[in-house]
Length: 224
Image (tube, rainbow, N blue to C red; front, side, top):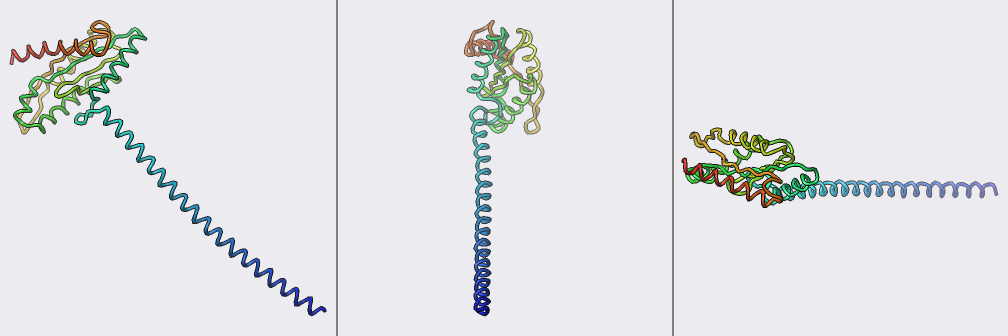
């Protein structure tokens, strides 16, 4: 009987050991599978985060292209009108003035015709940087089209402040440019307008500054 009990105990011990070994093996397989699944999820998460970052970059680029001029990087006409409208609304609420400069480059067409469009584009980017360098933080510079630029000056005290900005831009534009070893001199015809003195909306301010600019442009052509 004692021998039978020993035999049974041995069988049970062996069976238990075998079951424990099998359980450990199963748990090891399960842990390995869980680890692989976790690694897979981490890879998927990293990929999704990368795609999300790329999507945000593309959205930012689309927004930039929607409001910026492709050549100069300045605001385009559509965005300028939005900014001008916002500046006028804010000025109405606060009892402030808004200045507007309408700029045309004298002599640009002759340079563009003689040296070609690539040289003309170089002149435009140079003048865009010169104009942008002469305004305050919070002012908006726009390429209106061709060789025309518009500057929006929110919260100016009076018309004299607008004229001072125009004078600094005019001086900067008049600095010489070099094309193919040749010195070129352009000037700026700058029309000015002031809200609310010259108009109550963006279109009225643009028209007033545009007319003033063309008067100066006609005088330059007569002198030239």
